[in-house]
Amino acid sequence: MTSTDEGAHADAARRRGSAAPHGSEGVRIERGAALSRSHVLSAALALIDADGAEALSMRRLGKAIGRDPMRLYRHAPSKDALLDGVVELVLSELVVPPLHEVGGWEEVLRRTAHAFRAIAVAHPNVVPLLVTRPLATPLAMRPLGTLRPLEKLLELFMGAGFDGRGALHAYRLYVGFLYGHLLNELQERVHDPDESDDLLRLGLHRLPAREFPRLRALAPELAGYDGVQELDEGLDIVLAGLRRQLEADAAGGR
Image 1 (cartoon, rainbow, N blue to C red):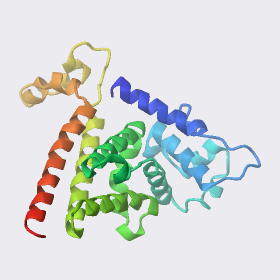
Image 2 (image 1 turned 90 degrees about the vertical axis):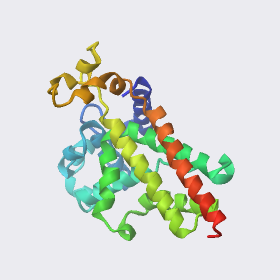
Image 3 (image 1 turned 180 degrees about the vertical axis):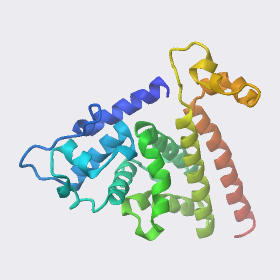
Image 4 (image 1 turned 60 degrees about the horizontal axis):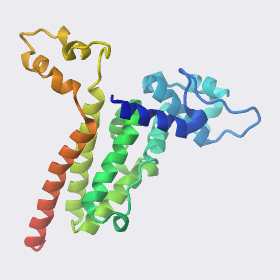
């Protein structure tokens, strides 16, 4: 993770204020203060940011906010519901800029992609939930907050000239690329930053040289990975393909 990404992570923690964890602790609610769903989800997000989703439990969450864990079930009836709520909370940070404010559907997609990446960098432990939680629930039964980006992007694509089927295809291609990029970027982690040799910094020296010659040889490229540049280069390809499809549909009178 670059220093820029670390700064984004720190900024996101500061924006969450008291919900930012200290070690593995969350935010404690003052005695007598009403406990809201927002408090519960913010504290759960803080714990996931600190220690990962596997470490989250109702008991630990109750301890973090200083409340009886049984009271939390009023706001999230199960851990699955709690995880869905955290995904909804994180996605509420994603802003898809209106087309009239940006000046082109491709620019909207670029800005949305970078906004989504910033959220992922700020909450890397939530990224697996963003990818996998939708698999646990049929589309119409997901939290509404998780569907709003889908609705806005479909509106964008149809406003650009795609028909319904084309808009869905464009959305799937775009979001599939974003998820794939982020999962790849977040796994490009330095094993030992104090090492001067790229092979050692990445821990690739542990791989048998005869079995993984190409991967070991690419250590300098892996160590110099630039997530923003890679995202833009990938977007160039995705958007060019969508543009050609839109032009072909228009030429065919579809």
